[in-house]
Image (cartoon, rainbow, N blue to C red; front, side):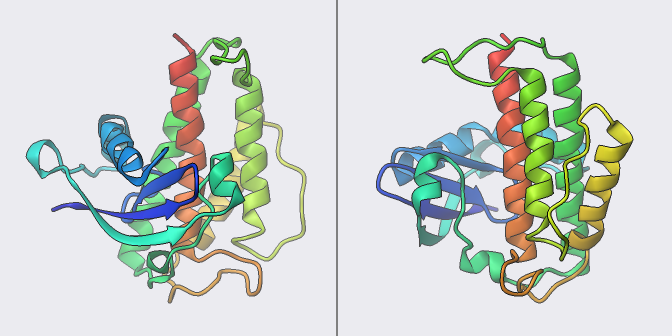
Length: 219
């Protein structure tokens, strides 16, 4: 089966995101570049799928089928997928919600394992920038608390200490408790929330984007 992909197209950057594989999202200068990069990351995303007890198409079966194009915005150009697609507004059955929850949990587990094994000081980027390991971990945990306001009706709360693993796990468990429910595709928080499918896609993308960054900058 082909991998259904949504494109988020802005003037200078395009994101390609796999509809049924939350977090498998990559960008490129053009749509073709983004799709090529997405498929190139299949072996890395396959580890997430495997941890969740699933498997990606492979070999000749691995091809992308673009099912939707959306217009990107300033956040797209900055480097994050930010546009809710029509595909994100589709209903989410109980079985599919649990499948997506398993993939998000797998992304978290792999991120924590990679971060624990990475050096504290990471290789700098081509322009000498980039956070070191602990700053990346703190950024991921902090972003999830911010994203949580799009998933459940809560006031802004301080992020847990990234070193307090039980507190981080509790925060993530609360998120999954909401996201793992079947939905009709409507906003999870009326007026300012995200549909569940998009929430899965955004949470998992952010975790995996930084997981792969840590891996790449550890060498």
